[in-house]
Amino acid sequence: MVVHSKNEALICKAFPSSLGPVAVRWFDDLGADSIDSFKELTQAFGSRFITCSRAPRPLNSLLFLSMREGETLKTYSDRYWEMFIEIDGDFDDMAIRIFKVGLPTEHDLRKSLTRKPVTSVCQLMDQIDKYKRVNEDQLQGKGKGKVIP
Image 1 (cartoon, one colour):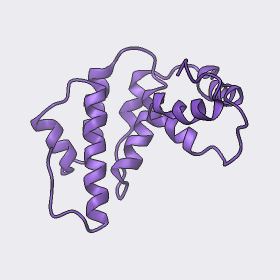
Image 2: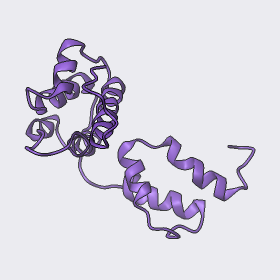
Image 3: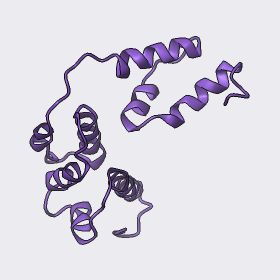
């Protein structure tokens, strides 16, 4: 990107590839033509994520999260990751366990995570994404049955 540092349009288009799921959702929610320059984009990003003056949440904040009846995996995982990024400290192993316990016992993802536990938050996010894609495919009539990664 250093070679293209003068091309603001390209830099703005490449910017979301460096973001996590919550920041990508923020980026996707920006109104069309609401940002006029890369400088303005970085200022908006900083206002939302970097200069946030909220105090970090304690780990036990995650304990109160669970998948609600009728809630999609996408909605539950989005709520979970929003809370997770506000926690100060390195609690990945505990955060993985708490996410799993927050799923209903009959949920296929919970069963899969029990049979084959993940060892990092990145692996957990990958598993969640796989299950969301399978669920979306099944809802659209493309799924031919259950797929357990």
